[in-house]
Length: 192
Image 1 (cartoon, rainbow, N blue to C red):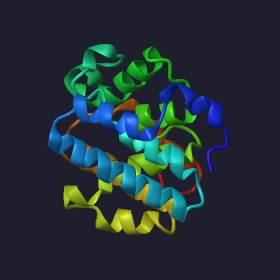
Image 2 (cartoon, helix red, strand yellow; image 1 turned 60 degrees about the horizontal axis):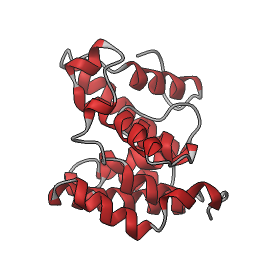
Image 3 (cartoon, rainbow, N blue to C red; image 1 turned 120 degrees about the vertical axis):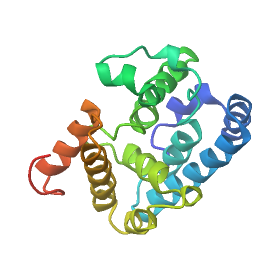
């Protein structure tokens, strides 16, 4: 299913990456990582997408959870909510390690704010991250993703935007961009 296997060469075997990630995060976080990776693969398979890349991006998505210094704030909301940065920090770390598959890098980077443009692997990881069973929420999003990935993504992003807005919490500009992109494609009604 991997279309460009050469892009994966710097990473080595998936099992080696799983072992590396296990060393970089707490046990509870690693359990989450495995659930996200497995669910991202299931969503990709159900939607006839690149399951290998979806799984690998799921394994790698939280590697920089404690390494936020790799991605300094770009906008004020980054400084106020630094966990929004760990996707960008993970991408920076992977690039420093010599990994260059743009599909996986974008999925890792965008898992906190929502996928930019048309990147279905990033959508798989984003939806899996917000709906993995260990969170105990969003089962409806998880089920919808198996038959309608864009619909599940629209529901996940819309829920996040409306939740934050209702509480007076600023929405990250990239999340608003993802929301507006879904509106432009007709997956969501009206402006945010």
